[in-house]
Image (cartoon, rainbow, N blue to C red; front, side, top):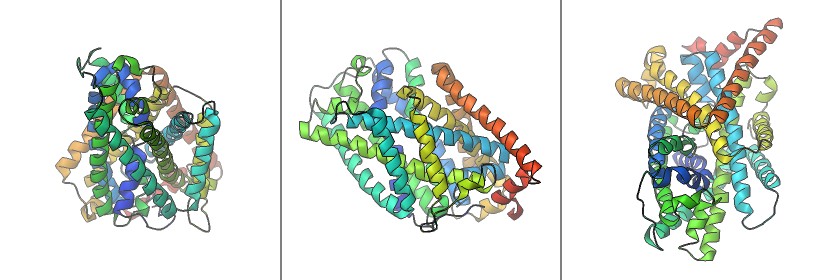
Length: 450
């Protein structure tokens, strides 16, 4: 199976910083306003529903990360325990979702920067950020984590200051009726809201670079979930407490607008700038984490071997990082609405979660030796419950997304179909060169070691 490209250098603290820095991105500064524009104060329930799914994903990720301490662990786990072809499609969908997510976050970054630099070109700002962070990832994982720590500390303090001020000061708006448009918008709102939670699983893509993964991955996931859930609940409540939900649909930066009602101008500017740090931290981890999936696919020959190239100085998967960066720049060109971007990303993530859910579900039986040998082992009945729950909830979210945003969902389905066609063509092309894609996948996934 794939090893770590640059040595095991991420401890428990670094893993928490990585997860929180990824999960808490620009979306929490933007999406609560867009969701509340139809869900009303019930936006809080949308985030609660999204958090429920996040619990299931955290439990499954903790187990698979402990059992498969390798880079691109989701691909390895799904490929070994379910199907190599299905693993390819799951990771293909997630990579597509990741590059779209980077574009979404890049635009979020640009929108906040333009608060200080009116008239600045949105595309230029987003492009500069993505290129800069792609370069940072080429330097090495330790330097990347150090930069991540500073960004995470800054935006967490800023968000907590905002929430405390908005919930205790000014003239809070009534939170009733809680469901002014009924339960439907609240349920539909849980789809883009989950984009704000969509990141806990990124740590298993870096499992090969985490020290003592059986201890540090589950611990980091538990701590990170508590931090994120508390911050999100407070921020969502704070926004709807300060701005009438009927006005939120017309406000591009709801957190900053709400902060301006209760805090001095200088503090509001700091909070607005924290969105820039949150955005940068999310893009930073996305490029770092999902480049490992590209690396795993390239090593298995499912993607061209060129993408498996590593930096001779740092050992980082330089070719995969560059590919993720370039693909993200292409995604910027589509210029879709924020909610459409978020829905596309969630559809891709849901497919991956179905895959890892299936892998975790059969793990105790299909790879009993690894499961029994793991220093972190969730009891079988509990693992079955959370794995099955993750599969069912992920499929339900895809169905809800299809009804609430059919265009973005269709785009996601089309992207998966392209992946299936590519996989079939790639298999035929390799066969003509006397190379078996199945054999290459088996070698990369370590079937000979079962």
